[in-house]
Length: 149
View: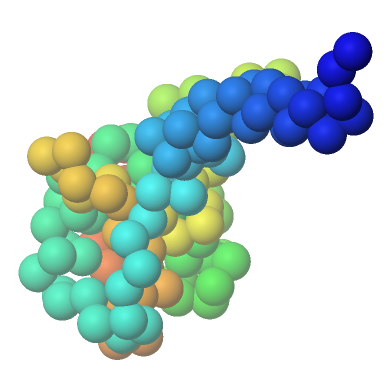
């Protein structure tokens, strides 16, 4: 007859075997969540250079631009009376914010201040740039959006 301690030990071992693949999977799984927000590198606030931010703005897709422009308006870096019509026209042209629930994730990420840098690098957050750089970046976003119309 098997002792209680052997049964308990075998049960504990089986439990560990069942959990081990989950733990290994958790270590190698990519981050999850909405869009690219979980992939943003932790950067000291205010440490992003103007060159990095302006380069990201210059290479942004229309969906990224629209989202970032929305961020800039909501954060008061752009005058809403002047910028909303530009954003509305850009959104209409690109259809990145359709009337149904299927929007563009790049637009959503941009609306939180995230910009893709390119080259497979993690996106940057405008929140990690100084207020002066954010203001300049938002002006560049608006200028690019106007040029696309």
